[in-house]
Image (cartoon, rainbow, N blue to C red; front, side, top):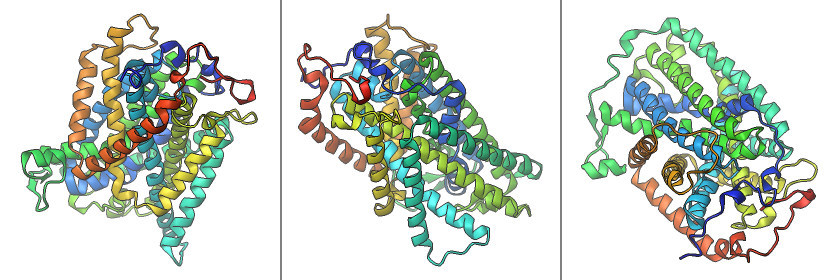
Length: 492
């Protein structure tokens, strides 16, 4: 038991002993981190999830759902900010857990992050293919076989973005700035053009009387209370759990810590600012969408476009198409970056094959692990029905949120003297509230999602016991020197 609960010393987490802290080039500055966060957060929530939840679950109360999900994620973000400012490393929640709770828990969180990021990349790529085919059709380009076209486009975008990430952070950062700027212009057009066409009567009091569902209870909460409901406060909170998918991404900013100048202070600012901006944008677009058309008339497939068509502004569909394609492109790009950095850290610690932690001499990036991640994303997107499994991304993320919130409380007691660039205010109250909010979002997920998650984690624990426990760097005698990484750099 003591073996699997061994903890990584904080000094090794930041590479002070082996130089691993500088194994990746520092390329990000504070503004870049905000763009990184917006690149992954401004996407699916605006262009699909909001309309789907408004039409089927929350009605105009979807605006409140965005606020609830935003507050829950802000609490988690504050906790991430403190730990990232204390341990500025590419491993994010995985490394935080390694230092605070021990190796087996770190592996579990790392395994959950693999589920989150890998599935999210494949899922968003699948959505990107469908939206791109639809956008081509709106521009008058007809394809003979939509399914085949989608499969081909998914392959193209994943190969292209994997290549960009492999070429180095600077190349990806330049592409990200261009695409995020363009999609923010598209989102701004949606808000500015839609505002004059809002009818306040469509908001009601943001509350639709609850309606019982004919289907059997699906979520953990529905099972506990014995029935399911749509709309009402039950629907608003249920929608908040689904909408949490839209906010996933601020945590990925923490994985860029090793590549950030003055990371202890820059990372907290980048995470918090990007999340606040994204929340404001989501609420603004949600108000426009719900205000322009009564919620029963919102199309689940094309919510924003249907709202503008109802207002005789069909030309805006082209702007929305461009924004959606660019928006989901940046989401995929940042997800690949985040996944690369997490696996790089796990490999550097020896819990997965250390060869994956190789840093390219030419591009100064972990090219090998990037190519592996891209290949797995292609297989998942092309051959696995990832869309029905969307909640797996959410539960993997929320699971990590819970450990980070608990980590703030525990680290304050165990390691009070560690340097912190940011402190969660009103601790331990706010971290405890973050735990409660995270737990609430999790019990609003489906039982089937929980079943798949438990199976995934059980399989991951088996992998750790068979491989990771024996190959961990902490399993080696403490007198054994660390081996340098390729290219003359070092890793732990």
